[in-house]
Image (cartoon, rainbow, N blue to C red; front, side, top):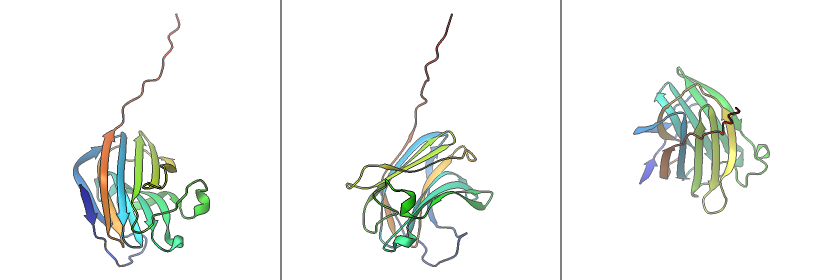
Length: 179
């Protein structure tokens, strides 16, 4: 399955709503893995939305890209009661010295994996077929415990494919019992 999305194209400042597609029957809780590939045609951003409760409460991980390196970025935000706040923004290559790419390249397939473990949000990404998944960010925020998953675009047409959403198993820690 390939999800194709056309975005709005006018610039509306910082508190705009991107074009969003929320998957109706896909629900993630505190422990999940979200994998997908994307391909964007223009400068702009693509995003994964997760733990979507409603249009006023969700997380969004954005990847800015295109021709202009100064407009490339990675950003994790949350929207709570209708107000956005930035959890982490990486806006220069120098902040990720071990990552062989920054933002997205137009007309190139990319792979993204979001791992959710309780309040931990881990983001891994790669350019498909040219690099392995590398850590982009790791942050803690447990404000929204669960919700649906979706995708968003801004100023670009994008395709999303190979979408896999799985619950993560609980891991048992060894418990030593002394008598």
